Image (cartoon, rainbow, N blue to C red):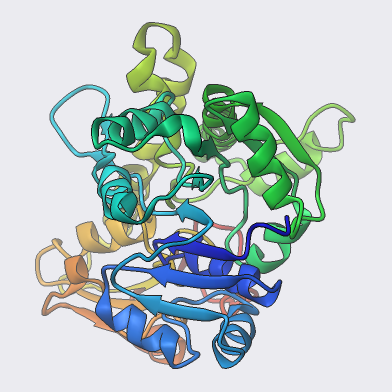
Length: 402
């Protein structure tokens, strides 16, 4: 698209920063925006504030070339990409409700800079109707939405492989109008090698929610299976390996729960929108949310006769070989175990340098693997980081098949 030269990316986290760096390395002038001044300062030095393979090279090259700059405020651009968090409200309701505060705040922040012909893209995973809500908000603030193009294009990347998958994966683009879909699809085709699939905004929103709910349901089956196998003293890992020899069976891997910004969150967006039609999706979510409690109960049973237990928790991230702790069941388990009277918790997480706020307690220590293996009474494997694979000890409670 020869007419598109500048891009403003709102949110420089796990999706926004890789996207901004990729676009800058593809020739666009990119203005990245984040409310975190520390993150902005780090990026403007050509460095990164998150862990993601290859991202450091992309950001360094983008900043060095002068095509990527970060700031706390937006500026005028041809394309605006909103890539901010979409968590849910932790309330007393049976089904958590989506929190769109960040999306709406990001939308308001770009209003003074929008001009005719702009493309506004929501990449944040969102409940059905959010893209339309953005258009409505802009209209209420005297933006002529008939002269701009508003679309949703959900990110579909796997942490640890983001820089590859941003380019290689197929993308789904859905506009609030057909013309918006076409304009947005043309933009993505300039840097995406995968197929760019065109639809409407609501279908694009639903596609991402369905993809992650599918995963959640299948993980729930594996997690439930692991608890049943434990009851009958059956090796669940061997069982799954055998069952998967069937040509039409592909059971996923059980763990200590489900975390992250997508699979642990997105199914609730469907449940909150259609509670009467999403019983299976809700049940899967409840099964996966119950697995950390099951892990905790097994550890407590193991250490019941130890007066001052020293417990090693291997891994805090929500999946292997990343530093992302969002919605991590390992963090929840570590925090709960720290409440055992007279306990000392040795947290081993090679991808972080300091403990998150909820784990800043006197009896929780971020330590090395060697110290944990040497000093602890029980070693609880919660995340299958590469550093942990192959560890052998009669102290290990292995919930991830090391």
